[in-house]
Image (cartoon, rainbow, N blue to C red):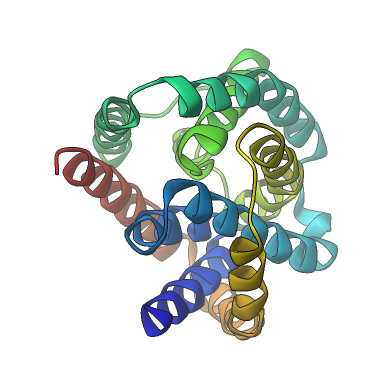
Amino acid sequence: MIFSFAVIVFVASILQTSTGFGFSIMATPFLLILFEPREAIQINLILSLVISCVLIQKIKKDTDSGLVKRFIIGSAVGLPIGIVIFLLADIDKLKIGVSLLILSFTVLLILKFRIRQTRIRDLAAGGFSGILTTSIGMPGPPVLLYFSGIDTGKERLRATTLAFYLFIYSASLLIQILFVGTSKAIWLSSAAALPLVLVGLFIGNRLFIKINQRIFQAFLYALLIFTGVYLLLESWQ
């Protein structure tokens, strides 16, 4: 279990640093195999928050501040809805619905379907991200799908996503602790993973410089397809 945990955190940290969103998409499904849902989600939130805090000062010049504010406003509505879903709803059914939406929209994006960015759509993307953060610990898919749909450059995507995550991970972690509780084991596991996170940060930054926009876009689609398929298969077990 320790080795598996180390590999998951290390790879996910590299993805988060090089793309701006990879940690929760990669780590959460595998952490759910090793830990109870509450533990997996909170470890994900803690480590993702650390990554965002470390990186944001270096890349804040690429951040779309107006878009971050609209994401935050939208997510403020979605976060409490997500915790209600986590406490009351059938999570497996939620995962099936989310996976089908992710896969459907990813196919449309691969077929070059694009949308026009509007204030309402910015708010909606933030809202859905908030719902998924407190319910299944995955804020990335709605934001990633939206950025892909409006054809965002990799620098703006990474910086804006990480800035948004500073808010949503902090708020989600607080809501989880208040309504679900936490444990010493969660914080000890997170602390033990920090050295691997820091190494992943270094490697991820190096990769980001070398990845061109076309490869970056293909990587986004691969991550979205992986997430959708995993959630679908995992919910049917």
